Image 1 (cartoon, rainbow, N blue to C red):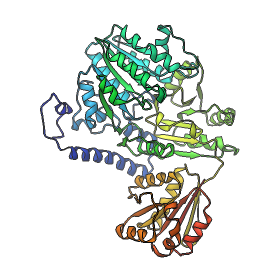
Image 2 (cartoon, helix red, strand yellow):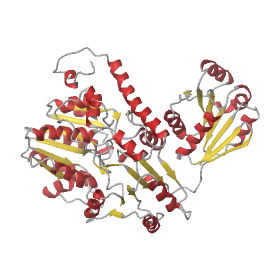
Image 3 (cartoon, helix red, strand yellow):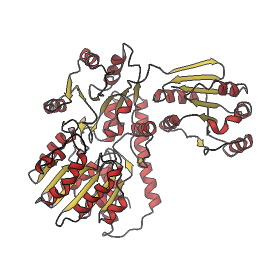
Image 4 (tube, rainbow, N blue to C red):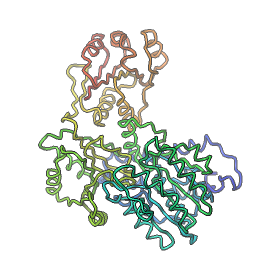
Length: 564
């Protein structure tokens, strides 16, 4: 059955009985296979883990800085992939994404005049959009591609420069327009305020005047506020009423427009639920740290953990930062902040000591620097994340954690954070006395949680209680998943008595149990004296009395993780 093409699964094709549960299982098995293979290989310390991860994620031929478009020619864009054709293909390849997402296949192969594609960062929206576009160009159809990204400080987005070249390779049947170019043609001046409204106010009229039949829009609705949703629906409604046009629109992940109202306007919605062009480690790390409410599923390669560096006032801060990046890659993108605390001279001096050439993309006229960086084998592109929206890169260095979301650059396999706001607080692991382990560090640092799991494995901890105070306990759960270990049962948020905890222990005789501190605060002495299993206490404050109360019960093993 799996050798049948996805074309057979579409509504107009032959009908086959398909067990959806089975297909779901196969999807997870596929993702697990990628993750476990990569995890196993990385544990053997290959010579180039970044390239190995990149090959399994997006393909080894993919540019170090791109726009989510496949570099491999692959099969014809009009060909539906078969299961047998997936062997050796990256998880985030066009063939893999189309095969494992029926919605995407329907979007690509059905001739709907009004299409919306929706998904999170790294779900493959631009890849599928480009595949649809290529299939039309191959049929000699005339196409227009519109980027809805507006410039930051009048500097054209990097996405625009790269995408323009990719489209030019497809021939003369396609024209590219930028948001700024459309405003210019429509006589609209982009001021310092309401720039998005200025662009979207003329977009539908511009499309109506185009001679081409097929119109593609990418990154639609990126920066409009929630209060502007009705204005955006007015734009989509106007466009839906334009006769003689086929509209294919990719929504930006931040666009929170009401999808049900788009359906009412006549659009077919293709929602991509699987993250396939971000590594699981980076995507889950960002989701935990940023508090993202995304309901997407990570179905991708595991990848390397992000590296977290603090201590910006230390003399060796920039040296440590550059060294960490260059350990695995000597060609990378760097986001710098608009802040005085960042020392541009020190950073560039450290790059120079290691022979790393710098290329800046910070102002109008820096396009030549970008082109040179793209052609180079080594180097650092210094830019701001506002200029890099909509792109993906292999290795990324970010100064100032709160200045961006790592998901903004998909396809990243090596991510380094240099936090300008935190004092140096290196991870330390101590055992002040038998049966008591103290782990300290920064709550955003993945090494804190890998150290905790290391100790759990060393002490052969299989059944345990976790008491936590803050939300970043999710990073501990991510580390357990990375190691292929079961995650603890999370007891619902409530106040519990000794009797309740006794019942929980009887019901869960293997693995861990998790409680929020406030829900069992009155039971800490009892837990320390009577649980008879290791206790892990994770907090970002100095709860000395809590620790004392638990330890007075002389638990079999007490591990405290105290983070800033």
